[in-house]
Amino acid sequence: MDFTSIIGNLAAVLTTVSFLPQALKTIRTKDTKGLSLPMYVLFVLGVGLWLLYGMLNNQMPIIAGNSITFILAGTILLFMVKGLLSRK
Image (cartoon, rainbow, N blue to C red):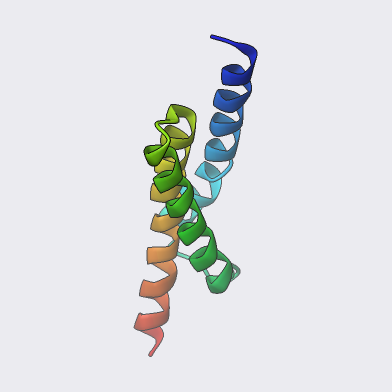
């Protein structure tokens, strides 16, 4: 594995793992009141586009990292939307 691949894989691992604590806390408490809905909508859309980019260019670090991040951030976003709908 070359240096560039190591950097890409390390970046994918770090950015993906950064969402794990928030996702676990949100799943455990179901509390999303302190989170920004517009930020999560934009973020999940952006991660989805990065995932598509990685697939189109066959870039495994981008595909792997963004797949997991999409699932984690998407889960948080679903809890946020569900919370908004239940308050109405």
